[in-house]
Length: 291
Image (tube, rainbow, N blue to C red):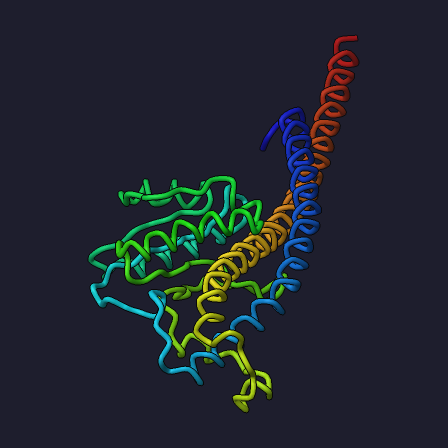
């Protein structure tokens, strides 16, 4: 059994850790709510843009655009979004392991990492990362989304890659999120199966000026930027949600450990008092016999 001083030191250390995890839990709640609000605002824009693109692709079969072409040479660019920090449960490991699993059968790949944890992970696995966006995961802004989209569009237009996939964590609720691989380019009609076009779109009555092809050429770049921004926001919300749950669990475990150590402390103190009483009684008996 530990001594009383050791137990007191242990309790003090755990209480300090509990204060830290409690503070991180509250900070993660605030950041998660902020990222969730950003996602809700962006979700409507994303849905309408995808609906418009789906309508154009359905009713305009003769559109020609580089983003619609697939060379079929199995050269894939991966945008892998993870966090800049740990202490968020299995959030980073889940999305990074999914990325490695999806890359396994690709002969030629180009890796763009978002977040310090992603770069560190791939370096440890022996992968060469091509572009690293640091301190971007914690700041899911349109500016950062445009930076990432600019590099992606450049690679695609130069013919370096003929497919782009984004590996991110899809946010459903504060307690539910999962890693996902999303094919960003080339744009195909099957990519919009989850989108229901509004009634006026479905009827084919929407008029595009000056032409559907011109509108598509303008919108498709904004579509790429919007989808990158959406994945950044969802990943940020998922990371803070995972950290919130992890810190809540850590705080609860610290409280349980403190309770157990207090019981151990009381037991050790009682044993010490009992031992001292026995020593006093024994010494009194010795003095009595000596007289």
